[in-house]
Amino acid sequence: MKLSTVFVFFAAMLLGSAAHSQVTITDADFPLVDGLVIGVSDTSSFIGVGTPGASQTWDFSAFIPTRLDTSTAAASTFTGNPLFPTATFSSCASAAGFSMCSFGYKNTSGMYMVGAEQNISVTGTSIHNMVFMLPYNQMFSFPFTYGHTRNYSYMQEQLAEYTPASPYDSVRTIYQRTVDQDYNGWGTLITPYGTYSAIRMQQIQSNIDTAYNHTPGGSWVMGATTSLSSDTSYTWFTPGIGIVAQISARMPHRYSFYKPAGTTGVNSDVQANFTAFPNPVQEKLYINSAADGADLWLIDITGRSLDHVQMKGKVCSIDMRPYEPGLYLLQGATVSGRPVRLTIAKQ
Image (cartoon, one colour):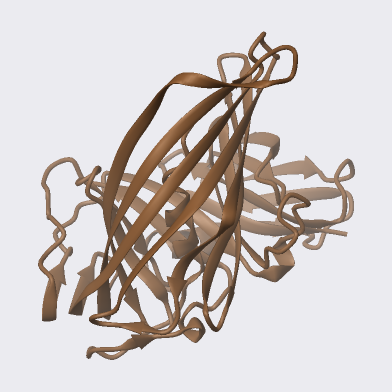
């Protein structure tokens, strides 16, 4: 599975507020703390991406979410994946049969994506995807403001391992990417979850995708075709939050919005309706809910699903004794579709 949407998960690490005027974004505007991003779909109408230029108003308030997906982020305490030793933060998402974590770091010159790890289980087959950036993908160069442009290239290597193994038990894909970024607008951004002073970036990414098959003898053989593709996306930034909205032109009915904590709706439901205790935990973890029923997954720092619990009432438990000390994510959704996300510390 191609991981062309890895970039959007990093929006989950961004928190804050801003006044409405032209702004400059620096590394300080991307605080690396727990956060929540909501990906929403509205198939009833197409709002569009608005226009470039100064003093614009991009109004997405009419967007009616009909599907909710969430991703979570964690700071440097939730790292340690041996595949990505330089990473200082991670961003994770999960659903039934799927889990994924992206890894990166930032400094005063930019925000970098190091790689990602993904696990998929479908119809008796498990797929383990590992993604490496060569060199690291510098997604943003700090500082930036309206009128800033940037062009760069990088390579992404993806390794896929299948269980049970087949005669061609893995696939290696090399993506050669050329990225053109144009920070071509500033103004007021109105989302279903808040109004912000924002800079808009238009990004055009061109890809040359070459797949290789792994033979039983251990060698890599290039596939018969090399595909060419491109994607245009739009991202809005605001001080103290970082990314507040994002859309790909390939999916015009699907947006990702940042949802501040403490407001009504999804994020407050997550905090108010679910608790886990004791936390930190040594043996048995108890999950308490004000709602009846939920599907929950326990996920480690690699994005691997360790346990699945179908919560039938208001209380359930997970035996944490088999797992190593460290941080884990408990993530899922209630029967009504509300997302659940808790960080669990194992002692």
